[in-house]
Image (cartoon, helix red, strand yellow):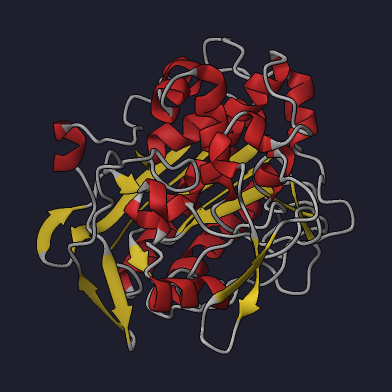
Length: 393
């Protein structure tokens, strides 16, 4: 049996098992080398309310796996000299000019705000050290939403972006809406919407025809349904990302696993598309996959809104840093993923990793809230482990 066949058999086995056990309604999973997709499989159904089978071209709301695509456009602008990562981000995104830090709430429940010690930079936005958070991972943001009407970031409105910083820029790592602001930096530099800049610079060169902030009619027909797990029981919902007022660089894309594997393959192929088109220079790929947090580390993300996220941390106890723009494990992971590989996830339990050392990467797509769903994460980690086991023979 060839190595590629062994990997494909492993992925099919895990995807089928995860669905047959009742863990998830449906999943699409895929694995690619630097040369080609070697496994792409679908199992289960798109919705528990409909027997329509999940297919390999099913469309997903990919949430935070959008971030690395936004980061790629930012890196291209660094290459061209149009973006200075260390300059104040407000130079490109004027909406950041008056951002303040929230130090808590006064006795009347009003936010206590002050000027930041320094201006957030685009580098800090890419690294999640600028100071922005998410209401489902941060109690101050959750209180702003609950008591002061701050819109959720998923509403994709201008107002949703206008949140205070949680700390002085550069002093902590906090996962949040930083990449949505990075999208505003891109729009300020290019004079185009984020979607248009991303389309011409990344999506079209990679042949990612099913990736967009505004799904086509064909994509809508193939879209998987969002599910909610409550007290262990899954139910289909009518959740849908809205037509965006602001194209959010942190979460707004619709895509397919097949498309995302092309993006992963670019990283495995030193920045080149399948046809040799240079999306990123090899030295930029090297730079992006290094530790840029310094002494800071990725930390547990507490599930502040239980319907949206459980407590979430990959490989607890293992040191993890951040590159441009994904997590990097600093030690070998129990799945077989080596130190220095990159990975991240999306709120509806979508997961990817890529390993430049072994020229392998993969994507696991479901549509389930809350994040860090044990069955979804478990299936993904089992797939990754099975892939490395197959590679070892």
